[in-house]
Length: 186
Image (cartoon, rainbow, N blue to C red; front, side, top):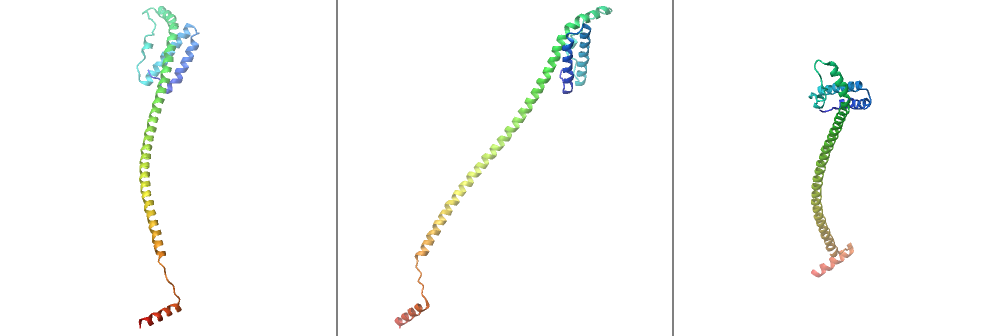
């Protein structure tokens, strides 16, 4: 038998009422057991379940045609059944809370699995980004080497260009050189 969320409060009320009924008269105990049977019957009907065996086997002995014996059996038999009924109600309550704990554990397990999958995806993405960063780092190292070589070549070219001397002459010097060269060639 399975207790639902909507039935647990009623079950817990029955348990409390049963604790109080333990010190009640035999008639009170018999009435309480009948109430438990009716309530459990309602639960079974709501849940589309069969009536539990532990209630079926607790029916007091009945003598056909002898109502006084039947009433006497109920008065003597029911008081002895009350602790058994309370134990069974507590067991139903216990099963309900264990089932709830299992459901919560399953939810947490599913969430943990989802987080693990997400972490694995992030790890794979991180590895991919690390590989891309290493490749980019390698290419940037080559770019630095090439840039360094280009700077060295530029410096060498600059040095060679400054090593050649340029002679500057003003107009008077030019004219003198021109006359000198012309005299020499004639």
